[in-house]
Structure formats: structure tokens, C-alpha cells
Length: 193
Image (cartoon, rainbow, N blue to C red; front, side, top):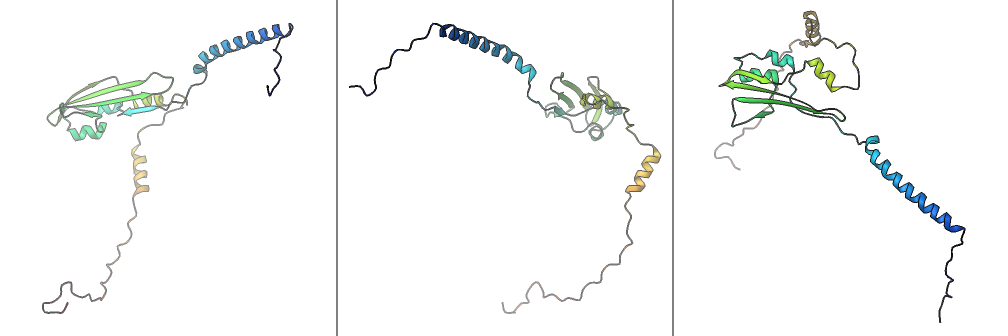
């Protein structure tokens, strides 16, 4: 004995068959359209990639300030600490700079500084940009107007020094020592502990 009565076989009506075929064809067409859209999707929507700046920025002005015969300390004051200073090549410092930005070709510049003992012998490297060219290459989205001068006149330096010179207060006389008596640090011999 069956708990459930048998169900009759499902038969499609002759008019519903073309509807089912049409739905199947539309589903296949929609799925094929998805693949062509998904192939174009990476160009429409891209994830944000941060700008990557690595190394030492060395500008044309800094390289022009280098003179043969300078000490290592003077070179370090002008260019900063080298990115590469090898124990095996102690007479050479390498300054390398790379800048990667999404949608742009990466920038890479190198400068090698050679010493003889503790004295600068020579330097060689890529063509370096000026400070204004470098700043303009970093921010390509905003367009700057006139670039402000990067040096101050003597009058500007003097006014800056006057504004930032601390005013020395009148010297105060030293405070009188208080009349306080402290016990000795060491106990006297024979005293009870």
C-alpha cells in the first residue's frame, strides 16, 4: 500500500514547447553576453593602486653642487645617505630613485658617486630633472600656475631671522640655597644600627 497516490506523468502542451525553447535560447544568449562584458570589465573598473616612491630623489641642482675633492660628509650633506653602500665596494655610493604610478610609465633614475679614499673622485648617472620638473612629474593631475622661487632674498632671510630669534629674558639671580640640614649618608663608627 502506497501512502501517496501515483502522480500522472507531466506532459507539455504543444503550445508550451516553443516557449521553453525560446527561454533556453534567451538564457544561452544572456550567458554569452556576460562573457563579453566580463572581458571588458577590467578596463572599466580597476582597483586603486597607491603611488610607490622608493629611494633618494637627486635633482640636477644637487648634482651640480657636487665638486671633486669633497669629503664623504659633504657629499652626504648634499645628496643624503646613499641607498646602496656596499662593504665590498666601499669606494662607491649608489643613489637610486623609482616612482610608480597607476596608468603611467614608471620613472627610474640612478646616480653613482665614486670616492678615492675619503675624497670625491667622480660621479655619473642618468640625466636628472630640475626640482621644478620633478615636482611637476609627481603631481600630473593638478596643473600648477607659476612655480614660486625656491630661494629667498637677503631681505627675506633677515626678516625671517628677526621673527624667529628668541627674545632672551633678563637673567634671574640664582635662588638662595635653603637652610635645610640633612642627616649624614654614612653612619659614624660605633653608632647603633
